[in-house]
Image (tube, helix red, strand yellow):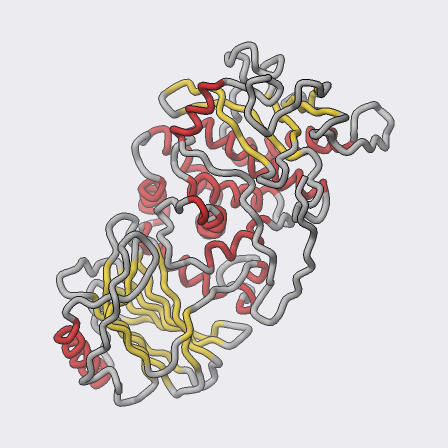
Amino acid sequence: MRSGAWLLVLSVGCGPVLPEREPHERHDSLAEARQGQSSGARPTSPQAVPPSFSADEQVESVVSPEGRFRVHFSRGGPNAVPPGDADGNGVPDAVEVVGRTYDQVARFYEGLGFLTPGDDASVGADNGGDGLFDVYLVDFAGRADGAFRLDACVGEGQRCVGHMLQENDFAGYNYPSYEKAVRILASHEFFHAVQAAYRPGLGSVASEGSAVWASERFDASLDDLEHFSSAYLKWTDRSLVQDPPGPAASFSYGAGLYFQYLGERFGDAALLSLWRDSLTSPTASWPVLVDAFLRREGSLDFDTAFVEFSRWNLSTGARARPGDGYARGGGYDGLAPSPRTLPSQEADVRLTTASARYFQVPGGSAEVLAAYEPRAGEDASRLHLLVAAVTDTQVLRVSRADGPGALSAKVAAADATHVVVALVDGRHEGVGRYGALCLTAEASGAPCVGSTPEPETPPSDAGGCGAAPGGTGGAAWLFGLLLVARWASRTWVGGGVSSV
């Protein structure tokens, strides 16, 4: 049980404000999962680590209506399920909800074309009594609310089977009802079992992000993606292709937004291909697998899709509009751009792989121009600049410039309350890189011309974004000359400018 209680959170003008949901489980790396697998203890075993049944609990089990699952539970003790039995058939209603829901989830994923997890008859004596997929209802004591555990794999890190642990009563958890909680947990955690039927070692972003997508795909009325969206939209400067460290685990769940984009833009085949291809390309990372699918089926690549994804994220929260990005973007938290005043200069702005940095300046000017000059000598490929005129409730227009090379784009902003500027790095591998950013509403380009931004203390390259020096005086002077040339000729260097 969890001691926390429901909080009613109201929308306050910038889109839905939902409490950020805690991760359902702590994601284990494949190595950690294999260590757990070697211990071989189910929650009914005396050797099991918590959450588990106590030695004096009487554990019962029932088979789901379609004969796919065996649900294990107790009626008394710390793991007791809610006792209600409205139909008087001797099985607690809570247990029947679990069995019925897991049947629906498994049938749904089969219908999408995903593999069905194999049976566990070969696991050994501690397999729940038969080859059915086992679900154990245990008390997580507020530390999580579900977990898929590996039991055995046919190959090296491929075609694995396991069992499920799920919270016994959800008392004190942030769910609207027991039934909703079960639907969210069953659809999320069982998708981990589906992943394991392919290759469970793709990392937490692919694992948790696609599981959040799967819940949304199973039942769009479930709110897991809505709750986790802020965990990505607040931290778009993090690399999507690098698994976050411990305390940042929610980011992997928030990355469900990227897989939602893939699903809406390219269909279920994008997600199905990711997991199918993980078997045929057992050493490939998930971004490489996505890139291969996009090149094969979508006539584009990871970079092109990522900048489009970053554009879709402008139209979230209160700025969501029908036909502009996500089908249900109004249910997601909006972006959290870094505020700037006009004019603004930053000597060295850092970008990392598969990331976007959003800045916001006041609107109301005739035009706002943004320019970005990559640091000399660094890779300048797959860089993009979006400049969006927005109000509190919509994206009015977006201008775009694409690299390689220096980027500049401007947007009419007289009718805008703000202008949002996005620097997008569409690479799926590489290291952080830097460049000078200039934002201005002055027709002359001042003060970006003829002045040098003050250098700042360089950050650690371990992650996140920041500003750093690096001999920027000459670069800034050249930056100014480039801006003058662009403004005078109204031609835009760096791959061109377009409205998107």
